[in-house]
Each structure stands twice: as C-alpha cells, then as structure tokens.
Image (cartoon, rainbow, N blue to C red; front, top):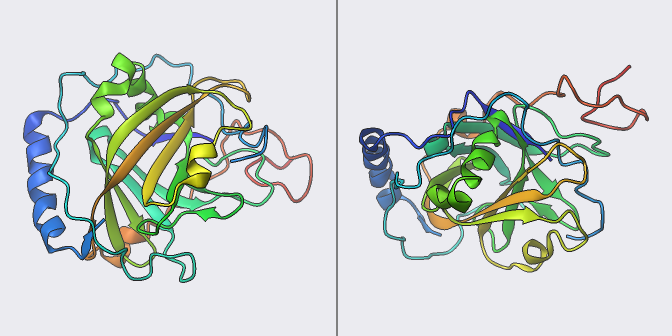
Amino acid sequence: MGDALGAITGRVPPPSRRMREAAALLPALLAGAGVFLVVAGLFSYFGPGPETSPSPAGPSPTSAPFTLPPIATGSPSAGASQGDGAVATRLVIAGLNIDLPVVASGPNERYPLCDAAEYLTVDRTYAYPGAPQPTYVYAHARVGMFGALLDASKVNDGASLIGLWVELYSADNQRHVYEITRVIRHVPNSATFLTEVSTATTDQLWMQTSEGHADTSSKLQVVAMPVGVVAAASPADAHPTAAGKVCPDAPLCTASDQTGCRVR
C-alpha cells in the first residue's frame, strides 16, 4: 500500500514546539464532544519500500512526544458510522510533519497512489473514525508519506513513536485525536495479515506501510487509540483539495479497469 509523506525529516519536534502544539490543541480537546483480513496476497502490492536515497536518522528515543491524560470515553460523534458517510479525509502527525489527504482505494487498484493515504475496503470499509470498528489507512514509505513512520520504527523498535498524537479528520468536519500505543514490525505478508483488525469492535486507528521494495515484503503496522474528538474542524481543514496522484514509478496498467497504474 504505500509509502507516503512530503518533506519529512523523521524527527520529533524540539520540546518548545511540542509544548506549543499541545497548548494549542488542549482547549479544543476540552471543548470537544467526547472521546473517544483476510485473503492471501491481498496486500502484496501495498507499495515498494523506502526510497533508495539515504534515510534520515529516526526520532531520538529520548525525545518524548507531547501527551495528555486520556479523556473519558463517550459515545461516538454524530455521523461517525458507515451509514452517513463520515469517512476519514485527512491524517496529520504533527510530531513527524505528516499531513496527507485520506482517500478511498481505487477499484482494481494495482498500485497505491502517491502523496496520499488510502483507507481500506475489503469485507467492509475501514474508514469511519469514532465508530466501533478500526480505521485502516496505508501509504507508501516515501518522503512526504509514511516514510517517517518507517524510519522511526528502525530506532529502538519505534519507541519514539509511542505517545505521538495522530489527528484524523472526517467528512463530517470533525477532528479525531488518537495516541500511538503500538508499533508492530516485520508483519508477514500472509493470509493472517489483518486478522486482528477484522475482528476488532472498538474505535482504533491502524496505519501501514511496507518495510521493503518487493511486492511480498513485510509490513509495518502502527496502532493508535482514541484520545478525544474535536468537533470544531473547519470544512477547509477537514476537506483537503489534494487527492493523491499516480506515482511516477507505478507499473503500467495491464487492463482498462485498473487504477493506480500508468496508462501506456
């Protein structure tokens, strides 16, 4: 699925910046509306691994990200269900300089898009933050996409990622905040790849990228749990105009109904 991230250094911001970000988000959180598989080979195309250019050093394991105590769990926000279209639209990890539109994976997708994250649809659509099911997004491990997640995972098994906040905007103009709690490396590309995701019945955010270049390479999964919902996101913030693009190195299409590939 992909490798995605724009000019990303892979480093956690200095403490002064983290404090400013936390201070800016805290009032909104306190004013918010409450907190808050499959078949073998299915993910074989989820993107080549990182680019061949030198990778930046991962975030320092000693650089603690900003955090807040968990907010009391409440009901999912209005509209956060499969029936009313409140799908994820934008993903931001300020601590890693990640800011990506979230779009649906294309029908008969041969290769994931660049400059975007995509949400997964298999037996159902995994794209409804706040609903009692996981949201699952994937992107290439490239600069400007999820490359910083992969870089950080290589340092002390991704310890610096634990506690980072992820903001996931939805189509109903809400900003859902998650906190990274798990980093799962070297996940085999097998039929049991998404077993845990497909059986989960609580609000969770799963992010995935590839760990290598081969179609069959292992995957990195980063799991985040809900912290709260900020219900005051503006339409402009929740609906980015960017929608991803076919990667310049994507394979050529071999059928007229394929997506994510280059047309001859």
